Length: 252
Length: 204
Image (tube, rainbow over all chains, first blue to last red; front, side):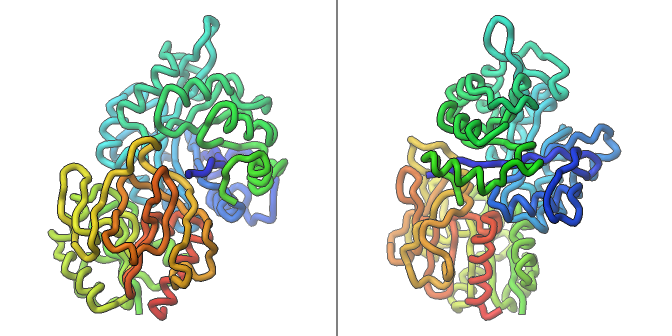
């Protein structure tokens, strides 16, 4: 059966990795392609690039990134951030990206999910959801990196995205993101139960037990990991060896 | 002395081209039967719907070119939809005919598992002396993305299978014709090893 996936996530702006990454014999640790190559060699199952470039004039750097990555990285990779049209999607996929991730543009124009999944296939359309817990229970969808509430229920939106043709949900807990105290197991598990497409859990990974729990307790199909790999606290291989020792099927 | 990668407008050809270039192959991406005819080896990639794939091949006059490549025992490698089109017919959408080079059909993956079958899964090598899997142990993982799978009438052509609810045919071979359901171009080091083995088969 399908292995659980470990996916390093790189935040990119103007073609460069956002935060300084502290390892490791790389010629240029700010180059997202070189980092992705490194993670490929290390045994990562996929790589996600989230482009946070603000201005529209610089969008072409995303296409360049897709193209350069395709020449060097031989695992699947996803590009997300600011993608708003079928034409954007086509361009990025044509360069060799396997999937694109849409977030704000999917909420503002749900038809984009439907149209793009019909043209390119569900397998390459990832819908990213940033969710924050509500005081009365449940979770609300936020846009613009957690700054803008939408009033939309996150579980409802995940189901709707699946119905429209999303192939995968990339689910980030805004409550947990950056805390390093573990994934939001309740949120993840609620979305996993609500949809039949794979769910990538994101936000909160601080140690290897957190990875184990999001797979074993919340049923995630994949875990997105950033800082614990980028800052060299653990290697992808260490994470996978640990998960395997805990009885989780991973590719090693 | 190049490998022809057939471009028939069926998605992500770039990745296959890049993977071969990455291992030092001389690659020509082409839809020209003449260039394909002169190649040392031929690769048929493909992502997308079966019917579109067959339609595009016929429209470009490439169906006969592929049949000729295989009949003349020139090294051939089909990938994903490039495996599926080699069979008699597919049940994707409505029943539609394939190239009929191999006996059998292409069927939907049975219910009970998430579809598409997407991600890393283990490949059990049945044909232990397969040149394509040289240096790769049975049980190694490769990357899959598909909703339909080949059902071979002649089980003798199956070189590996993969467990996904049922045993899925993950590769076939007969003579110099090889085909993979998984994506070697997205399967990291072992995927590239499969492509290198194919180059060796083609004496490139």
